[in-house]
Image 1: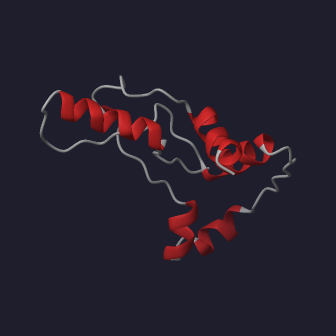
Image 2 (image 1 turned 90 degrees about the vertical axis):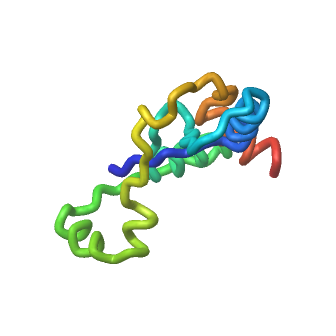
Image 3 (image 1 turned 180 degrees about the horizontal axis):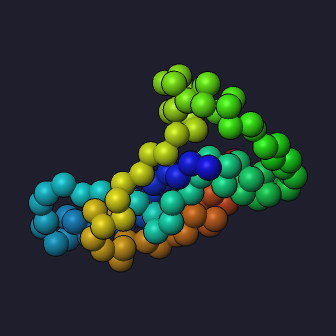
Length: 108
């Protein structure tokens, strides 16, 4: 169970447009409204493409063995920005599910 900050490209572009239009400067941390997990992305992507998914539980001792591995942590560790760093969410035009659908179906 990991968590990821993600942003769909249309949301990112809208964020950049708003920053430019407002002539704002600084450091920005745009992200979609919800955190998602690697499992969420896989399950939802397979659902959108009409495939079923079986998720098998992994024993905690196996996870703890692999958690010291950098590649494992990149794929399955949590990588999030604090939601408070994303001050305004007015740039969110596409939610997680619709963004994934557009990426998998509309641009395939």
